[in-house]
Image (cartoon, rainbow, N blue to C red; front, side, top):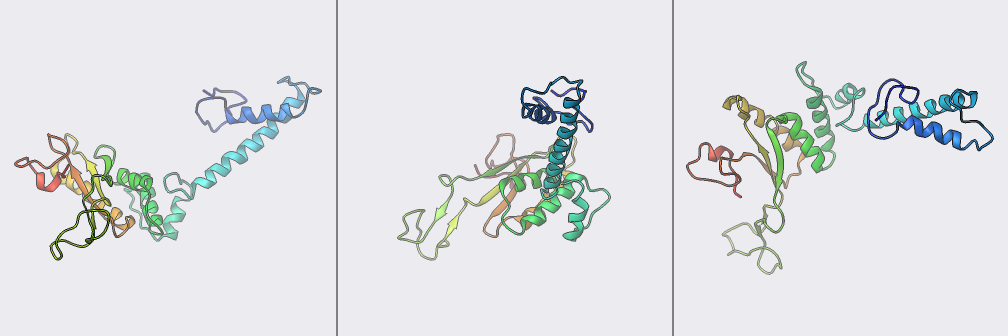
Length: 232
């Protein structure tokens, strides 16, 4: 754990192990050979520390600059990206919501990966409502194909679509915190739908679900089962 001192200059960056600056200074000193003293009060050490701090600052600045292209981590460039993408910002928007909005707009250039999907749900729903993303494995999916194909089930012509699969269906699992009204809960979960619709490919479908007292599954006569529950 870094502590205060020459190897931990401000701004503070906490983390395990030795501070990155210490690695750089000791590397510089090691390359000087044995003819130079490594005494921390000597001129050689002071010069190594000055050079190490320059390298360390460039390294940290480069990492910070790289983060400005990552919607999850961007800071200084957030407002710039919002102008580039023509995204309106409300004074009540949190930084997480703004970053998620930039991320889903960027994702329209391609398909959103799982991390983008997760970050979007978390930003719009919050950790008190959003639980997880539930997908269907190929082994459990309902797959229908035309007769003669080696995979899936085959039905009589005209009874079902020739091509159908539930493997691309996504369930966003949520919960209603105690103290949250029904109106607030349904409004919160509905807020993420336009974002998911914008970043998911056309062949993917999704639902926002909430399990009942018996867990995953659809149970008759349970309250609000049609609005919330899923088939297990």
